[in-house]
Structure formats: C-alpha cells, structure tokens
Length: 217
Image (tube, rainbow, N blue to C red; front, side):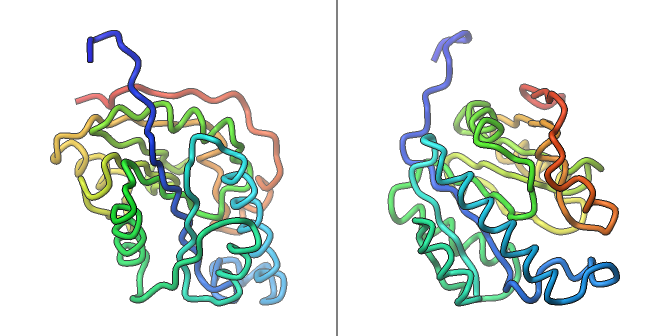
C-alpha cells in the first residue's frame, strides 16, 4: 500500500458485545437507582447497542457473549449471534468471543460495551474507517483512563487488558505488538454510564467530535 492509499476495508468484521447479567450490571449506581430500575436501564442500553450495531453495514457479524440467558435471548431477537460465556471476567469472555470469530474467518473484531447511550452508527463507521491493519483503534472514556471501544485487526494480534487504566495499557500493548495505533475521541464514545453523575449524559446530543490518526510516539 502506498503512503497515500486508503486502507482496505475489513471484509469480515465481527462486532463483539459483552454483557453482564441484567440484574448485576451498573452496581455503582445502586445508591441512586433501585435494582428494578438498574435492570431496566441495563436492558434498554443493551437494546440500543444491538439496534445501533445491526444498522451498520461495515460490521458483518454481531456477537453477544453473556452468562445471562435473558441477554442471549434478547441478542437472538435482534439478529445477533448469542454465545454462552464459559468463564468469568471480561477479558476471558473477550478471548472466548474473539477466538470464536477467528475460527469463522474474522479479519477484525470490534469490542463495544453496552453503556454508551449516545453512540450512533456514524460514530461506529468513523471508528472502523480509522483502522489500518495490522492495527488497533481505541476510544478512551472522557477521563482518558478506561477503554470504551476497541478494534483489533487481525484478531489475536494483541491482548485484551480491560480493567484499571486499560486505555494506557491497550495503547502500550498495541505499540509493543507492532500495530498501527489510532485513537478516536468522538464525544459519544467518551460518555459512558458508569457513575451516578454520568446519568445526565444519557440521550444528550453529543457535540461534534474529532479523531486522531496514529498515536504520538
């Protein structure tokens, strides 16, 4: 590929949506939302994520991994492939889902959490278009600490390191693995529902965002 050529589109991109049981998600909102309302919030955000992902032509397959049968049933109802989580912990679930995608010919996997209520298909399209395989695209949270979306192409070319300071860990891992690292900071990706003060961001129209190319050395 020449220096000015546009990257070739991924031909078999799998979008992976990991989901906790509806009754367990967003426990840090327990102080402001009773269990029934948290469960309803988790369900609504999952459905929003599935509907947004399903409208995206650039994603060729949509996979939901969970240990909650009701989540997997919702996935099927929205045209997604349900995958029963076999272990415990987010990173182990993502390895399981990524390996499943690789076994079916995936040339890229995009991990999308369910707690990004303002993300649109256009946000995801821009995110995907930033990928230059072999590479990764990452969207940090608004505090630039966590990871709110992650695309790896090809799958298996770096580790999943979700947890504390995962944004910095993923960027360092991508570089260490020799991947082209791009950072996407569109506001919709930064607005995740995690803490009580985040609830006001739900359904707020995001401001215009920006993207960055290769991360600085």
